[in-house]
Amino acid sequence: MKLGISTWGMPTVPIDVAIRHIAQLGYDGLELTVLPNYTTRLSSLDRAARQRIAALLQEHSLGLPAIAAHADLLERDPQLYAQELGQLQAAIDLAVDLAQGDALPAINTTAGAERGRWPEVKSLVVDRVGEVAEYARSRGVVIAIEPHYGSAIDTPERVLELLALVDAPNLKVNFDISHFDIVGLEIEATVAALAPYSVHTHVKDERGRYPDFEFLIPGEGDFDYVTYLRAMKAHGYTGFITVEISNMVQRRPDYDPLGAATFSYQTLADAFTRAGIDRA
Image 1 (cartoon, one colour):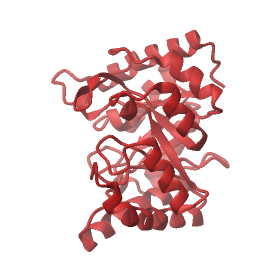
Image 2: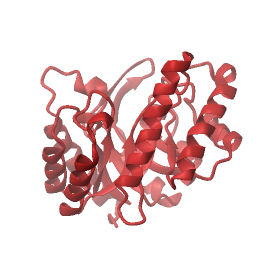
Image 3: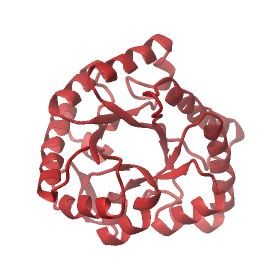
Image 4: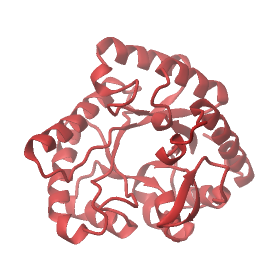
C-alpha cells in the first residue's frame, strides 16, 4: 500500500505549492480535486496546465491514483444533469491526459445527496452510473463510486448492490471508512465487505456518532488506523490510503491546509510503521 493525500483540503493552494509540500513531507501520491471552487477546477486546466501538472508529478515522483470530480447523478433538471454528466466526462478525459504510463487515475464521485431514499432512486442511479461507466470504459478509465453518509448510497450493502446491478468491470469503489465509522460499523466488517472492490480510499478522523459527530484531521480523534491498515492488507488491498480533510475542518477560522497535510502525514506514516506495513 501507499500513502496519499487529496487536494480536497487545499482549494485555494496553487498546485505547484501543494505538490511540492506533499512531496517534501514524504507522501507517495495525491488525489487531484477539480471542482469549480478549486485552483485546479476543470475549466482552468487547458493543455498547458495539464502538461504542467503531469511534469510536476513526475518531477516530485508522486503518483496520481484518483481525481475527485464529484457530481450529482440524481439531479432531476435535464439541463442541470447534462452539466453534471459533462463534468464527469471532462474529468474522465483529464484522467487520460494525466495518465502515468499505463496507470490512469480513477474518477471519484458520489451518487447524489438523497440519504434514505435508495429504494426510490435505485433505478435512476443505476441508469446514470451505467451511462458514466460506459463513457469511462470507452476511454479506459475506472469510475470509483463513493458510499457517503449523506448520499443515497450510504451503506456497504447498497454500493455492492449498485455494482451488481450496473455490472460494469470498470465500476469500483472509493472506500471512505469514516462514513461507516460514524454510524458504529466495525472496521473488520466494512473492510471485509469493500476492500475487494476498492480502487481508492479516503481516511479522516472522527468524533461522535451520526447525527451528532464531526470529522477531524487524522490524529485528532481516536480512529484505529493500525487495525484499519492491517485489515486492508489482510483483505488484499494494495492501492493508496489517501487522507481527505473534510469541509467541517476547512470551516475552522484558523484552518491551515498545509499544516493539516503535515499533521496527517505524521499520523498515517506512524500508523504504517506500527502496523508493520511497508509502503511499496
